[in-house]
Amino acid sequence: MPTAIEAALARYPREILTRTPTPLDRLPHAGARLELDLHLKRDDLTDLALGGDKPRKLEYELAEARSSGATVLVTCGSAQSNHARLTTAAARRAGLDAAVVLSRDDRRVFQGNLLTVYLMGARVTFADTDEHWDLERHAQALCDELRAGGETPYYIPVSGSTPLSCLGYVRAGLELADQIARARLQPAAVYTPFGTGGIFAGTLSALRVRGIGCPVIGISVNRGTDRCRESLDTWWPAIGELLDLDPARSRGPIEIHDGYVGRGYGDATEECLDAILLMAETEGILLDPVYSGKVFAGLCAHQREQRWRSDQPVVMLHSGGTPALFAYHAELRAHLMRRGVELAEVL
Ligand SMILES: Cc1ncc(COP(=O)(O)O)c(C=O)c1O
Image (cartoon, rainbow, N blue to C red; front, side, top):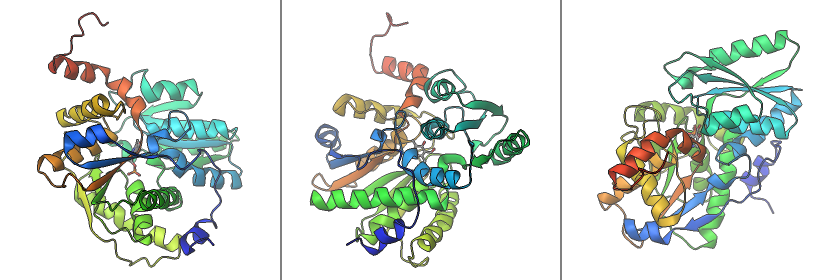
């Protein structure tokens, strides 16, 4: 018997882009270093073009695109946008074209995500902007141009976040709740990234429906806490409306921290690079400097203040983003050298 939320989710068509569930792994070595019982939800392992959070979101958008007769998916993001990579991959998997507007930022190197976007044959245009989260008007202009050329574009906003696509993270949150129950964990906290807040809002909705009442902690990757809370105020009732949940239902204990952003989106802070190294050296798991490294930096900082006891399970969501590592090779190299790694022979 499906539960009410599963029945409500089943009303929305989706086109499957990845096999699920992704694993929930216990990380004994990183946990021992941090003196907590650390668990990682491996959404970096979704199986579309190097993985990450987007396939879950795009499954719903792709179904919408199909029903609108789209011939081309259009989106926007930073030059190293994971979302551009995965929208392009989703389009290709569906036999469609992709067109992306990217910000003319200083990560415009032929590396990481940008390389893959070209490899999969997206039409790429660059636009000047201070805020890649605000490229929508450029993307809309591109849609007009495509329409004039006889195409049927389907626009997907930055980060792939819409109320509908948040359902992908409601599904992920239900999956996580089942895994938590099966492992008989009583998590002290669940950490997620917070960009537009789609992942956070979807996951939070599902955990609360399943009765998991621990603090859900969002680590902002770009904006101040107030702006993040405003985004959550949009997603929360919108998800409720889609799933017949009370829009005014309690969110339970939540925290959104903006102290790990550094100088701005994509700033590979010292503590983020340290967090990436810690995870890589202890567990052989790769984080990225823009999202998952920041989340882990926040968790590590909390643990320096001994926030969680060593027997308390703490869950972190790894949302992917690892291809961006390669666009940050200079910072990573310098960081390793500062930590005494000998790289003189390496070109
Ligand atoms: C790897 C990764 N994690 C997290 C996010 C942020 O997700 P949200 O916008 O749903 O907060 C993004 C957004 O692009 C991303 O690429």
